[in-house]
Length: 174
Figure 1 (cartoon, rainbow, N blue to C red):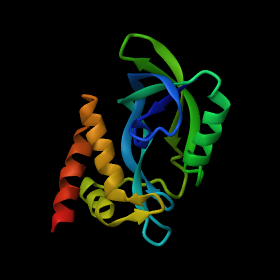
Figure 2: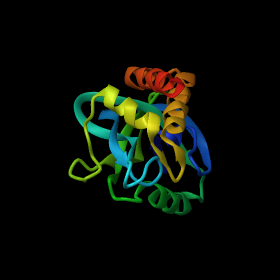
Figure 3: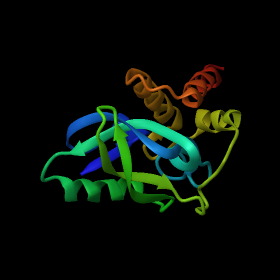
C-alpha cells in the first residue's frame, strides 16, 4: 500500500514506511483551500491547511510512502482518524508517477469541493489567516513553514508556498 503525501505527511507521516519516493499526482493542485477548524484553527477562528484541488492540466509533486508490510490496516485506520476528522477530505486511491518511472496506486486525501470548509482565497488573505491561526496541533505558521521547508529540501518547487512562507514570516515579525 502506498500513501501520497503533499502537506504534513511530508514531515510528519505518523506511520512506518519502507520506501519513500518523490512522486507526481496528475490532475491535482496543492492549495490552502481548506479551512481548518481542528488542527490549525478553531471553529471561531479557522486556520488554513493544504488540500488537493482537482484542476485540469495541473500536477502536484510530493512523496509516495510505501507502508511497511503488515502495517496496512493499522496505517489506514490511523490516516482515517487523522485526515477524515471533519469529512472535508475525501479518501481516494489515485495513480501517482514515481520519480524512478514506476506508476503506483496511492491512498490520497483530496478536498471535497462541496464541503463548507472548502475555500478559494487570494494569497495575501491566506497569509493573513495563517499568520494568526492556532489550533489543536499548534500554530498555522508551523504547518506552513514545515511544509515549505520540507518541499525545498526535497527539491520540489512550489512558488505559492514559498511566497506564503516569506510573507507569513514578514507578518509574524511585525
